[in-house]
Image 1 (cartoon, helix red, strand yellow):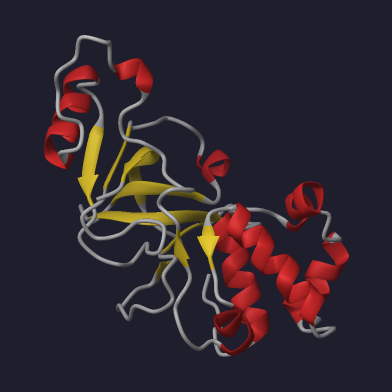
Image 2 (image 1 turned 90 degrees about the vertical axis):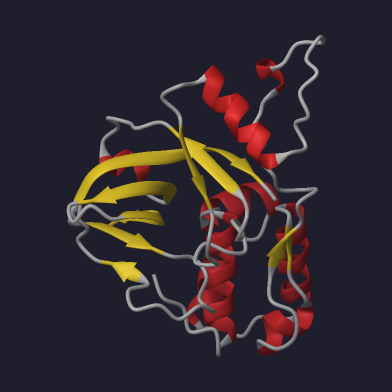
Length: 213
């Protein structure tokens, strides 16, 4: 999905996408009425100063750092995730015992160790900013090839092998007619194909682990 970040409505939609919360989920977690959020996002009513503060607070709770200046005007620091609040570790506590002497602070060793534990795991090193601010250059992501139905992977970040042999890392969006589109989530980068429409998917790997640089 593409967002018009020159408007506050586009920025509100984009930020909610980053949180991966539906309007209903936001209502349940933060008590912002679903209809109110929809009206703000569609530009039917202007968001109030109080509404802006409530949105900034919920973004912070979800680990997303957003300045009031950027939300209101699209200027200043771009949104980013706080690594201390949002981080799915590549290595879980179950992967270790008290006698381990491995240095898990080293990314390469970390990835190699997990590969030993799970030989079928596919590990991918992030080399561009297409999926920023969640995934950044130097991070590792990993997962397993799955037979899960595509419809169940809607709004999931996945490594995808395409019919032409290319491997891409994108967010999977399933449309109402069950078409599979693959999109980047960083609207600030310029690439030839930010959205791959009606993707020819041969294999897909939902991301289960994320190790930040």
